[in-house]
Length: 395
Image (tube, rainbow, N blue to C red; front, top):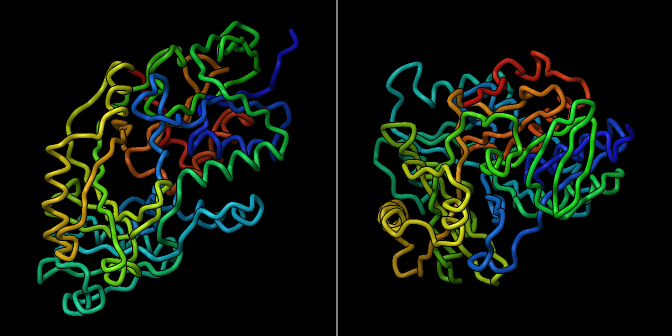
């Protein structure tokens, strides 16, 4: 039978929009399906996305070669995407890691330094005294060493990056369908997608719906992921604090365990006209299995207890924040048991999945989208694209 499209991508977030842009240069007959950001978050009862924000850290410094490679490949294309789309989203302010002396060769810092040498990244090591003097806004332990990636690092605006990807995809011939996909079915010779009360058919479908991939019958079988709550704290910054924090790089402070890290985004202006310094962590244990519970979380302000915990850490690390108004917001992280994203076909040879950001994928989203496009067109990923590591695990 004749199909409406050759390929349909479900999910208009960071991975899905990137996949659509890359796919537009590989094939014709493409549709990208996904809803727009709700105007009133707390009154919205549909699908959300974690890219509804203004800042995400980007860097190549990483303790894992696969993730570091994805980030480096994406970073290499940022300026081209900005130039072609006319949308700016990348701030190359650098990224600073600060942490205690490595315990052994398997410590995160030593692994990250090895990855950096492999990728050719320029990392400056700062002795504890140099770290405190150069980045005086940060009050870390006296024995902490700094690792500063000045080039090809900083932060991206995820909202703007998605807009840029979607604009270029549409210019490349992709049909943008503003709707929520509610079911995907392998009909034998093709795939049928129900979205916005209509049915669309395609030869192949890529489900790139992030933490919502297991909902709405989008996959033949659920992928093995944990959708976890994350609370983000926002400090409202005035001109006085900008004199202290205005030139800071993106910053990650490590603890005794890898999951104890705290990430800090430099002051960024948000749509409400105010400037916020943002920070968050990775230790919350609340997880979701039902769509309505995820929606309720996104309509909240996150966890009050976690906000207070983050505020306590923030004032310890950055005493100059004392007196600044602090608020919080919700986010979710989609974790896989492999520690890698999933990019592969499901039990259906016509339905593929791209998901599993593991709380670190924003900086790599353009490369992960490219892999999703390659998967749809070629049917598999090569070893050079770390295809074996990205094999989906199903529940």
